[in-house]
Image 1 (cartoon, one colour):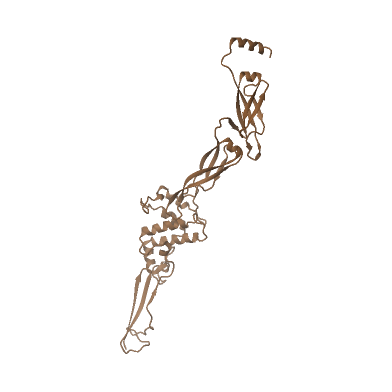
Image 2: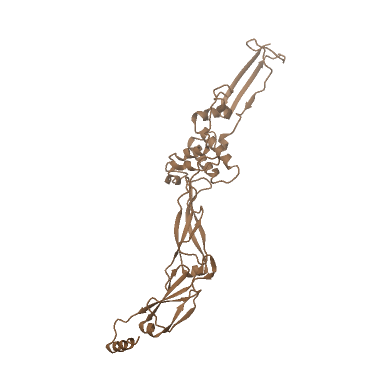
Length: 371
């Protein structure tokens, strides 16, 4: 009886094939026998096809084993932005983010990728031998996925990204490593606060109002394709009696960039110029213009109020320029006690004539001599 054993191995991406074939002459009986070199042969072994153990990094990134480096980078960019813990609040986002970074580091390193293609993840740990007897690859994955994220966005992407100019090119990516790390690493900073003036009329302060302000802002795309521009309406509530200079802040409602969290937007109240009044805290001042005759002989001045009423103010005494009459409770609501109001101050402005006729001058002179 003649037995011929042939053992061979075939290496292919993600597939190791090891087979043994026994050839027997017709009439030979089954059973144990000797190999060609005279040693005792092994029992018949079926042909086995095995896959490397460990993670499927191609599947992690959603690419095929034939993908080139650019395709791998684009896939990583999309997934890293989608699962970055600063953008994704899911419980497993951090683990997914780390796994994506690990796959990216392996598949963009020619040496590591070659070993992985032949022996899988275990091959990287075993130094590429696939047997566990080679030199072990220490730290085959970067310990900080956020640093991997930063390193990736330092790449010059070029001018074409899925047919459009890459929106990331406008930002200084040397600072992307400020992104937050949930394991105590560096955290990306927040952009500078954006401040806008918000003009309001005294009537709006009197009654309170809500101003609807439409803004346009930049945000990271949830699909990971750079930035997108979006519109949003902010409802700014102005309470009764609020004073000029009051700040109203909308946290994290402004622009977002790859290296900064959304900025705060702050509105500062500014009083619009009013045709009749000027503001003095919770008081309002109305200027009443009267003639010299009215100032000396008395008059009644009709004063408009903020709620469109007319209040008569009788003046029987001599009114001096700059004199003030106070109408209590006709001003603006007090900020801390809106049920109470300030006062309406009537400030008199006396208009003097440009000239006095001689006969009138003598009469005035005679009359004033007795004062």
